[in-house]
Image (cartoon, rainbow, N blue to C red; front, top):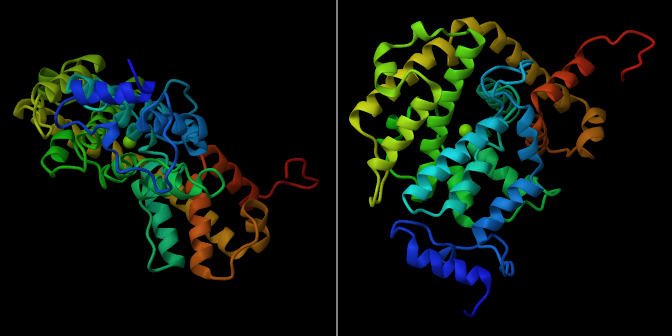
Length: 355
Ligand code: MG
């Protein structure tokens, strides 16, 4: 057999994968052209870069999923969420004969732009950033793309392929149930659509599981129709949703779900939104998060010395400075943001041993 191992893999993809799959050999390429790897396809290489080179990926271990800075070791973090999304997305992609490595690369990178303190931190950062630059805004999906394109490797970026970058940007602008997302229309590639659905299946189920395990919710609180349709155990619910998407999307150019499972997932989504994501019980914590993010942002905007210590010489232009501060605060983990707040806003006593 002739050709490199990569060329053989590309030939196998052309023969075996679905006509709706994105073939590695048909990639639109990278921002800066590079010599192909003799062994790995371009998407395998992207996946490996995210795992080995992306510092923002490693920081996901200390970023909130739902519970802020959890002290309980078994609760999901952004990193375990990302791994669950990648696992679900690969299962669906493989069953539909889509490009598994492209799917995995998108899934692993989809949340690298997340702020500390989850969606609450994201909203607070958006407000703080706009206050210093009225033309600016912050959204985690756009920031994930900025991380891989610009911020990683000291400003060089990871130089990922067009299809992975497009898939990162395509993930949802707001919380949606899988069925609500599916009715929104197609994302750029089927692989990107798979990651979006997998993201929703993952967070809906693992957030529910975390709430049940910590006693925030009890099983008897859940809508009975959700339990009847999706199942009474976490693994049953995930399995039912994944299998349903696969069965209704085989040999099709778009993803779909049955009406019954779509309905149950929508009911569960609205239940979680009311009881957890926007619950008044968490309002006090959200108020504190808004305060921390806002004050840290304002502090780095006003203190040349503090900014110089962490990112170098501050630019004179206020918009450029706000962009820099936004990138810095967005990159913080929950515990790092917490430590910076303590350091800059709470008296440490004198003489101080922990400057
Ligand atoms: Mg996600």
